[in-house]
Image 1 (cartoon, rainbow, N blue to C red):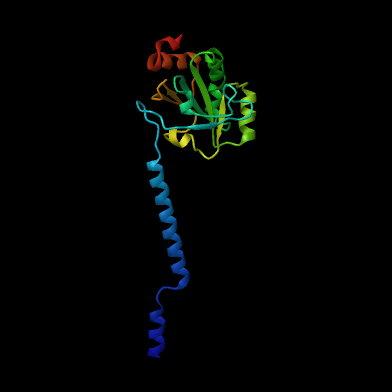
Image 2 (spheres, rainbow, N blue to C red; image 1 turned 30 degrees about the vertical axis):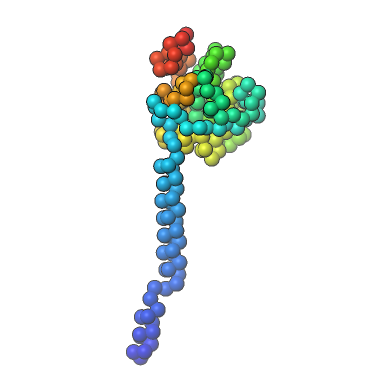
Length: 195
């Protein structure tokens, strides 16, 4: 009897528990690798050049005939990036104001780009038609754009980038008037743009 007792004790941890432990360790390593990657991903910071961004615009919402472009292609222009989603109720509060702003500024050295955050294409297109949006808009289904911008505060968020590619201001939450956008342009970027 002592032989069978010794044999059972030598077996150690059952195989199924070993598998669970290994799966848990691999999962933990994957989470740690993802976190490390996120910390190495350049994030937008006020007063510093913004990381390179690429936009693949929705059909019908291109910029100056371009269906795709990079932020560096807009060097010399003021760029305003508005991160929104069709499921975001506060985004609806500012949609008409952003469109009014675009209508007033589209012929100046200012580019307004909408970035549709983790949304469905049908939801995004319905939203843009509902609010008669005409400014350039790009989907961000896998958050490739917003992960370089977003401070995880939620949508809407608006980023003001000067002509040299430096982030000058971040607005968390909706704009309720075109005047608010103009004021930021005048105070943070160029006084002549506030008019």
